[in-house]
Length: 199
Image 1 (tube, rainbow, N blue to C red):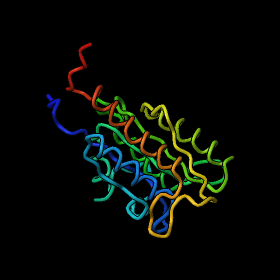
Image 2 (cartoon, helix red, strand yellow):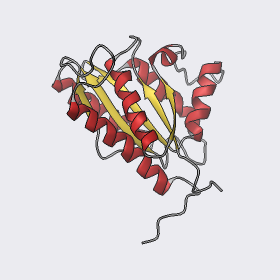
Image 3 (cartoon, rainbow, N blue to C red):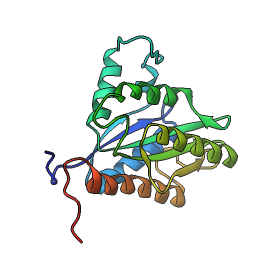
């Protein structure tokens, strides 16, 4: 049985192939908020995701990166996914990683069962922010995850981060902090082996 005092593991998945992307910076801020709320974290950023082979369900062979990714997600108590919004949807890079989670289908916790999933989108324009966030939440539902009540949407055509990588938008920073905190709060209450709070 999992100890109620163990720090929950929150896994960050996302980013883009561009170093220092708005998406990955946003994901890192949300993970920092999760750590401040009492979690341990692991990050699978854009460069790592770019090394994952295209998911092919008819093949059972997995690369070392795919195995690492699957095993860390399997052990997780919560997830935060951050994607660029492209043409109204989520990026192929992030979708490929999420498709790989089909390998969890036969687990006791099938797919993302019993895990909160924070959803973050960064896109050049509010219209794509909205449609991509909706698309990401639909994917999370299909994987049996619990999308966090707040999903963060960042308009990357505005100045969200400064040259040093600091968040220059107070509202965006607040959204990302809430996403990180909500995922941890869910994990602390509902992860397998944790005792439910007594009212």
